Image (cartoon, rainbow, N blue to C red; front, side, top):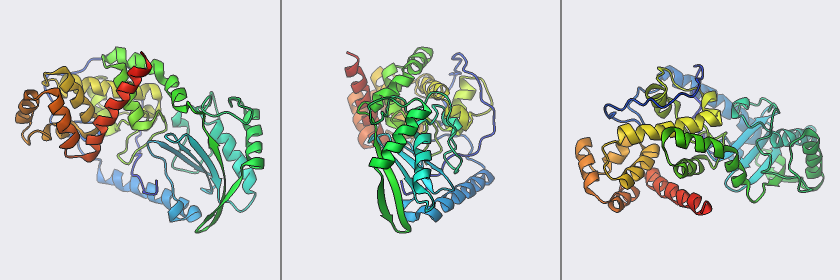
Length: 374
């Protein structure tokens, strides 16, 4: 959390509506994946502009909090600054904890109260919240955290008056001070409900079912990918420039889906991918491409399943390079192995350590999903 994650390239293209599956699958691509692609790299001028934006953001935060207490949003962590970067909300979706803190010297309790209310009532649409500025959170619609947090009376927090009352309770009973290198911070800690993950899963269950039917991708696989990638955090962002629940990268997987499934020549915007319905649709569509295009020559269904999961994280090229540097020979080697042998190779010999762990995690969460639905 103290590293500067590089993400959020400015995209100014318009979003598109969901369309039926029309995947062009005549010939396999050279190398296209969730985290790597044969597509051109981001232009240098775009990278430079983006790096300047991030440097400015980091400078403003560190000016108030110092280097040691610098935090930024990531896949499993929501981090939002307001109030001249002096006040922030931090949600750890894995631990089920929320911290609202301020280093403001003037009226810190009033600033905390405002931030607590904004956090409790934050919108379900991530495109409405700018994670990389100090703009206020505009409260609108059904709160994203509804059901994931309850007040001191055990009641869900949907309305302003209840959030206001809970904020007052927290400040009166839970306010804590922490010493920082640059001074001190005041904060409150809020526990999410025990089944907070299930509450988030429930929000997107219908979208997962629809995408599963639309693209003929197993529902348990989509579920497991979302849990692995973001812990069902729709605000998720990553150092690789991926967005949303299924962590789709616009210029690689997103571009492939637009071209091969949506019949478009542009790429999805950040706001498009922050929309949960679009994100799940795009992630599932990319699995459709992996299954029917890039890995269509994998003969064994179980082996193909393992290969698809690994390719979603480390690229089709990463899967094949596990077996041979020559792609055609790699496919022959892969098809000559049993599913168990392929699994062992992908979890011990894949060139990327993250991809080796990734396959194990996703398969574990698939089993967990199926056990819960028996």
